[in-house]
Image (cartoon, rainbow, N blue to C red; front, side, top):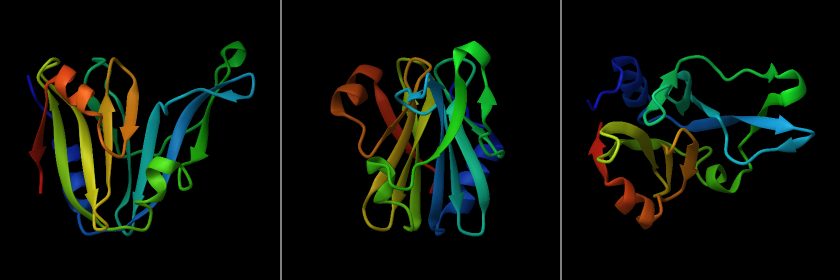
Length: 157
């Protein structure tokens, strides 16, 4: 069943017209090495508070939390550490820009809302998608991913 929480939809819609001020990523760190993709990303919009995007427990959907990411010591397995994404290549072009529209990303393969695409006033976008229980962040989702996952885009705005 294709669903997304009302709190998630409400937060996304309430951010339209607001500037993205900051993005923080939660990454697994082992022996001082930051591993690949973030496990969660907190977004801070001007005047709207924050929201965090992550993979849902079902391994296929996108999940939302009103809470900011937090660090965690995993002992011998490393740690989960927070890093600013302001200067990250994918995020740098949208920091300081106003959000103009939101699209839910629906996977036909998973029959779920697997992600969200945020479009900004400078014609740039930021897409978050759960692929195999791993959070991917793209400026533009690669065509092969769109095809393989049978992705459709539904406007929230």
